[in-house]
Length: 272
Figure 1: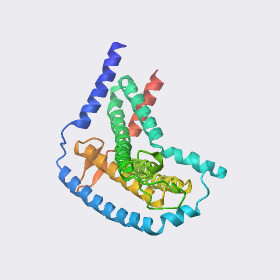
Figure 2 (figure 1 turned 180 degrees about the horizontal axis):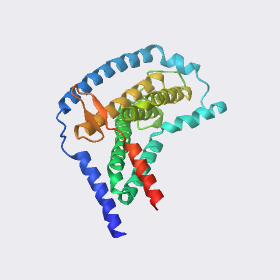
Figure 3 (figure 1 turned 30 degrees about the horizontal axis):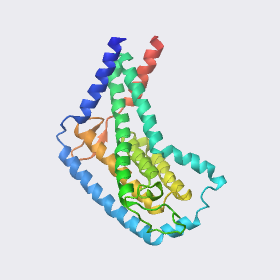
Figure 4 (figure 1 turned 90 degrees about the horizontal axis):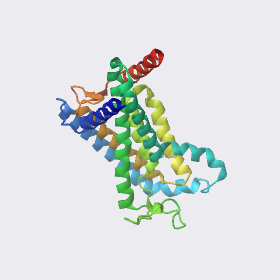
């Protein structure tokens, strides 16, 4: 047992050290420039959409929504919880813990695949976590009132630094989590691209339907989620963790870790 615990401790320490080691990829400057261009593009587009939404869409949209607490909206309330940050982070953390505990028991031939799977789970976890931290800072700083807080449909109801959930509307936490997940998962497994982006958009729609946010809030959340996941992806790629950088600065994932890890687990199970 002591030897097993030492191996588990070694896995954890090695994993943490890899995340904070100095970047080593020779093409990280190209990736950084490419990321900066994409950030600028996203900021400009999102800023235009957010301002236009505040001016012309937010109030008419929330006036069209059903009354808050409408009983028939229970499926929407259940669906929207799939992007609740606390739940998503808890599931990802549990998956990482299981993998860490299982890694010392896997055959040596499966370690590379399982380790890469762990890196990918870390990437998704940190993408959501970083986006959420930024989102919480913005919520507190901006202090935008949720729909109908104060009784009226008011798109300009702000109370900065209010420390009140009623004024934590901008940006949407569910939207940033959904879009951070969509970007991260799509970056790792492109075949899931369409499904993940549809999921993210539907989460945004659900937040407006439930009168939890204005349309501009979910656009801002989507922006924070994508930018956060993009930054974490660059951090990983610069350290050769789960991603590599092509000559033009494009970041692409390593492949096969999930398949290899599952095969290793299956081999281990059949052997016992």
